[in-house]
Length: 190
Image 1 (cartoon, rainbow, N blue to C red):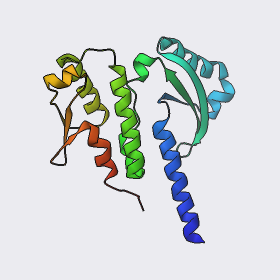
Image 2 (cartoon, one colour; image 1 turned 45 degrees about the vertical axis):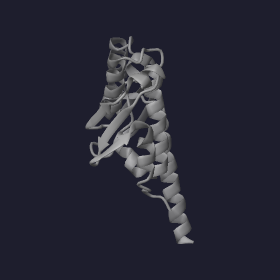
Image 3 (cartoon, rainbow, N blue to C red; image 1 turned 30 degrees about the vertical axis):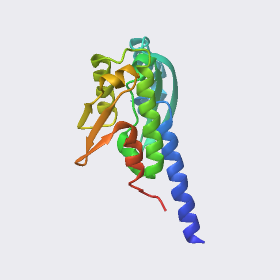
Image 4 (cartoon, one colour; image 1 turned 90 degrees about the vertical axis):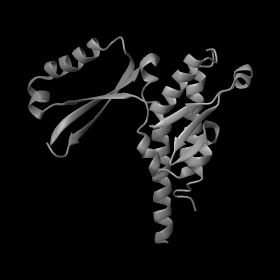
């Protein structure tokens, strides 16, 4: 019975982390206010938030709030959670290391989706050296890769395909096979 509860909790943790990693990325700004600030100067508290939103209004599509009491300082914190314009939000990404808390097969699915999203951003671009360089940089940055090489041939260009090779753990892995490489680690897999 106890093993089932632990298994259920672990699955719930995996599910919640997966949702977090797949969700739309937002930017968060924290406003720690003292109880005195909230009670004696509510207009000043609103003004601080208002000034911030006004200063960044060209970057924010929408926002919402969350709040809690900071346990170490014992003061209320208001969190402003912002949905940003696409030109900025496309550069936000999940904390890659959190994927280590997921089963390898789930991480591989997330990676496959993220690779597809990167290629989609360049779907209307020519398959030339400049575009391939931009795609490689996006992949390298997004996945914290040390080395990725462009091995696209003239035939690949004619077929509108790309041939990128990741150098990782002393191995050469074709980008198409990278999700399978991650899945093969079988972390948290039964």
